[in-house]
Length: 461
Image (cartoon, rainbow, N blue to C red; front, top):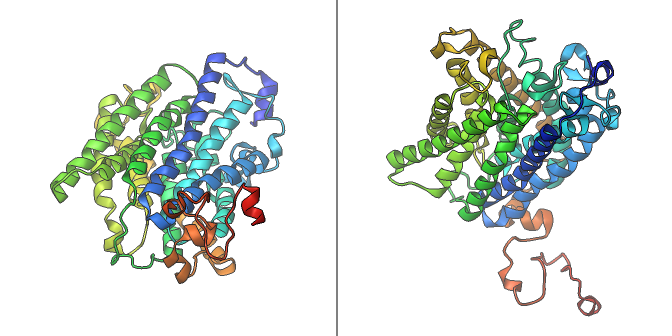
């Protein structure tokens, strides 16, 4: 059944309260991408700040366009190819969507809510290849990866012959992993975080290590930006999770509370590990713990109790604090710990559902209980199947995409440009041009790039 057929059957009347909440939630999630840009931008070195932020911002442009053209249809159109993907021409250009209704919200509100998920999913990947990627190639990658990897994954998790994100898709309603007994993923732990984390690992391997990795100091240059970015992400994430209820009611409220609890507990869990391991608490650790908790509770926020959310959070904070060191032990350069936070955090949240799912959760009596509530090992097995299916799919396909782009367009800047800094070589700008503070120049510049100015006399001179 497609959006068009459901709309023709008996279109319900949109509820203004639900519509207002979903549109507000969409705006909150859109705000997360600039928040991610600040979070990532503060974590890189001074010479890469603008490039890092632009890698997030460009996804708002590219994915915003392709979503309206074929992305929405690919994720939520009629099934094609045995359910692997939606028909990209079913609602090409949002044909038939603007006048349709999704439950108690109009079609455009659902379109708006889902596109911001797609945007930030793509942006998350960029943190794994900071300091060394060609911006043009990255821009092409955003379109290709969204089309071949993210949109199909969204179809499996969110859309399989259904409308509401909280009802699930091919993975989440059990069509693929055991009939009638699907994996729970309320807001995108598999489709977004495991997916982006696995993709980040693949690209990190394709591009190789940064110059001086493991030898030169590569500390975050501005922790203030990191903490501001983490705060924006936490703020926006309430729209991310609670908005996935697609209604303003008890489910959204319960999810909101669980999101708060898990995130707070994760921050504490990360800081405790830091204190025991390193002898001190860090603001970077606090910010990272917040993000780890948000990632982990995303799939579980509707199916665990408030106590369960605290367990999910503290486990995610502690384990992710340890996992970010894996890149040094295993020898891959995941610049900003996309693997350690998003892949590992997404796995934790998805798998813990198999242990902690409860009928006392916001989802209520419709929840298949996990092992700790007498439900046995079945749900845990289903959760693991969904998580690792998406992980393997994303890693393999992303590696192929990255390798092909690297061989054709070149994905990594040359060593001289990397040493100079990708802000200058890719954008002819610098984030901190104190030398020109009183000169009237608006940006830093390379010797072979003219200074941009709005002063006619300067131009004439």
